[in-house]
Length: 70
Image (cartoon, rainbow, N blue to C red; front, side, top):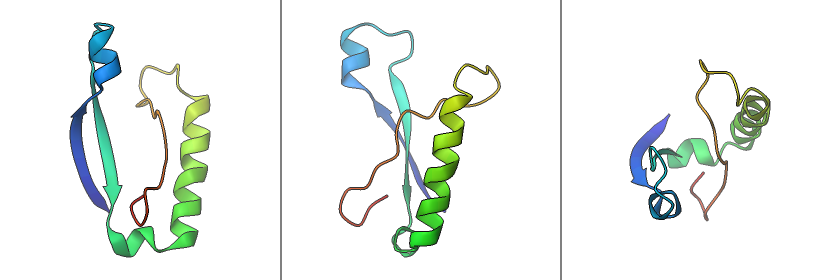
């Protein structure tokens, strides 16, 4: 569906967080243009936030768009 990047969260690094790294997933351009898919992924993101305290579910910190990139 896209490319996943490992990134250093500079704020978390400054406050000496235990693990300052995050994964950033960027959808393929042809998928980013699919409004129904993006809406569905956002809905999944919204539901996942409610499960943030479950140790077996990855924590999602944000969902955003930058120009054509989702």
